[in-house]
Length: 217
Image (tube, rainbow, N blue to C red; front, top):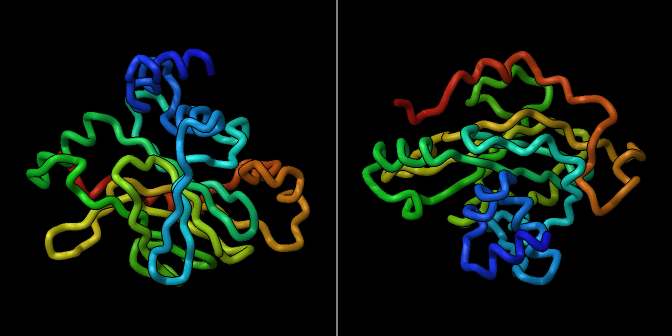
């Protein structure tokens, strides 16, 4: 933690600190926010659902998968409790440059969205979700809380942008998860942590069918 604060005081950005220390930007933000060095924000997407930018995430990072490497793209979805999902993402500089070349504009100028899919009891093909809705996220965000979800429901999430005609373009797709059922006592063990099952969640067969991104070389 002292090293993070020292680098921050030297003027390094969260991304630069993460790269220097070999950790995720989410973990940098968590430690900065924990010591009151970052604000917490929230936004309503207009549908009545409240999604929260995890500038001050109540996440115990010991529950998260291993940190992504600097040369790996990743979108990871985790259930926090029966009504809340947590998602974090990482795009490599190489992937960002490819996207910029495709759209002929700078990365920070592109709108960033999460598309949430209810994939309960279906073989998901990208177009047949039970329900779908979009959440616009900030340009600097690399993680997000999604509240007011349904208990005992399977979800996956896409991170993407939109074209000039409003078409959603997937850049990353997450793993599939299921929110705990309301009578599942495991999620009450630590209300301040991301809920984690005792056994790894087995991914459905359709998850392997997503073979790449809409943006290709």
